[in-house]
Image (cartoon, rainbow, N blue to C red; front, side, top):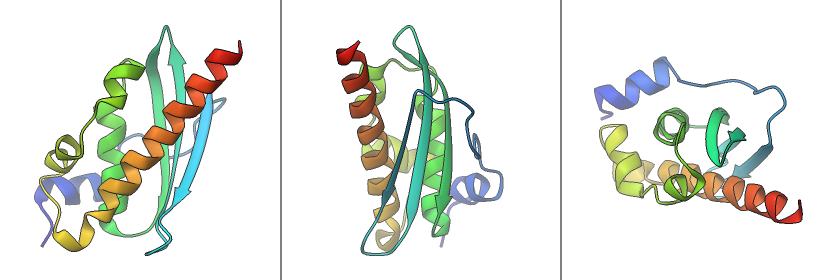
Length: 124
């Protein structure tokens, strides 16, 4: 049912756990299934220097959180914002239709975090 890549991200999550002193921390919940994803980011010179996640939910949500952190770490804000659902889904080796909500939650949380970072930088 799940790809080897997805199971690897679930069993060996990358960048999991709290991040000390993040520039932004955003948590979203999927009201339909109850999955929760929190992203914490540190930036430097307009790039995502560190990104960690905490997740509560299904296997796919945890795997998407892990893969997302690998995909955007080191990217500029603009590059991170350009991440597509296809890129994320491909990074976990595909998702069954019933698990596509996990990619939506991950990308929605990333967008909310980037929006907050932009708001913070425009106030400075």
